[in-house]
Length: 325
Length: 98
Image (cartoon, rainbow over all chains, first blue to last red; front, side):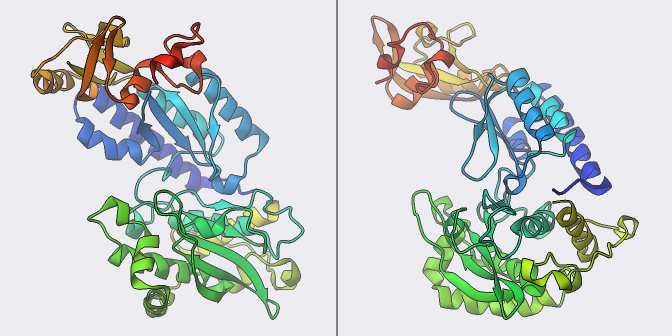
């Protein structure tokens, strides 16, 4: 299971302090609700029918006992004794007081959890198969890839203001237990000629216009996966509708453009993205079970990682998660 | 009649304008006539309410009844968990919403 490093913890702790200050200023009347709303939504705090609701991310549905006990503690101390696990592997608390929200986030941070990007028009929590890493029919453990996507998407400056929310799922079996094709991007890890890669489905969704995502690429090698996903997002970020909330999801864009034209644009964009070098080195890619020999356990020292956005840093952190999984 | 409703800023609780302040009980709400928007602006500015809005309602023997089911659900509480509503001891409380 992935463990926070010093950068993860520093980022989450800083966000808690920032949000505490924002809540204090809101309660003191120094900022209006119009100013505060986008700030609280960036921290997963909604104002719903009966009360505030806080959505907490459970990255790809993976929890340890310490974290589960903390979720129970929060339900008892700050809510009404329960929480609601969602279909995308988050948990929602429905009776949260605004003044308690910073303390809740601080409690969550002590067990490596947060509510960042659980709301708003950004890339949401990455979801996966509930049997990820344990199912016999998987070609690889999808969790390191989900973690890689989590780190890549967290505070991604280019994708913080997308036309609409964006959901990604990663699986590694033929049986789609994560409703992967009902996501904005669904990735099925597959093996071809002994090489790990992914089938890429884009433009699925539920809600008022349910659609099953068409296959946009039948195989993207592991060494290109992150760049390809970035290219998919870039095309959407450029051409997705921002004038009509009901037509802003990527499923509408692909429906209107057609899968072939969307694919053509993604392929063009991919050539540009690939040159940026955001993919982890292949030798450090999370392996498939049939390709363990490719796996290198030579970790990049954390002290060399200057940023969470660099590929060397991301790959080394993901690799450690895979080792301890 | 017109009612003014919103949420309490610190707690998020559903509240109703009583003419003098805010109550969690819709039975204590008063007709705001055409003054709803002005009251809402003043009260929101004073941070005594969050996201206020005016709704239509009818006056019944039991008190004001919001016209839209959404606001009747807001007034009572979650109909799927009557123990968490404002009338946890009344098993028929949900009938008022319908």
